[in-house]
Amino acid sequence: MAVSGLPPYDDTNIFARILRGEIPNRTVYEDQWALAFHDISPQAPVHVLVIPKGKYVSFADFSVSASADEIAGFMRAIGKVAKDLGLEAQGYRLLANMGEHSGQEVPHFHVHLFAGRPLGRMLPPG
Image 1 (cartoon, rainbow, N blue to C red):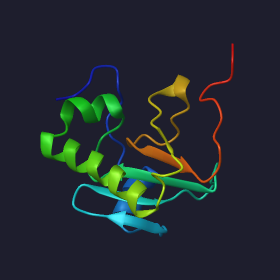
Image 2: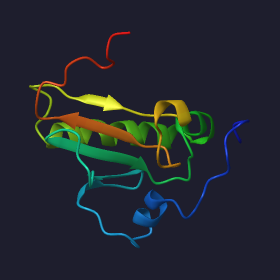
Image 3: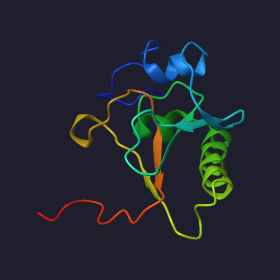
């Protein structure tokens, strides 16, 4: 089911190309539902991207169009990555941008996992 107002999925986006093996990455975790890899421009000591293997433009698209198994598998993959990297004790942040105003740069739904230092406030005051 398409989400109104969202562009169609672009098979040339960088994450689609990574999933097809056209662009190398530093894989942290992979299963049938998700691929997790280190961000090439990390914003924290640990900065991992977790992407679903399906063709989803955004969270809105994923939440409406993905099967229950895809959603559960993706969420479990995020939890497994955090646990496997030993991030649970000190804590971590998950961030998913959706749309132009949020700063979403790649039109493939993805979650950023940040950790490795105190991250401060989520948004600056004001």
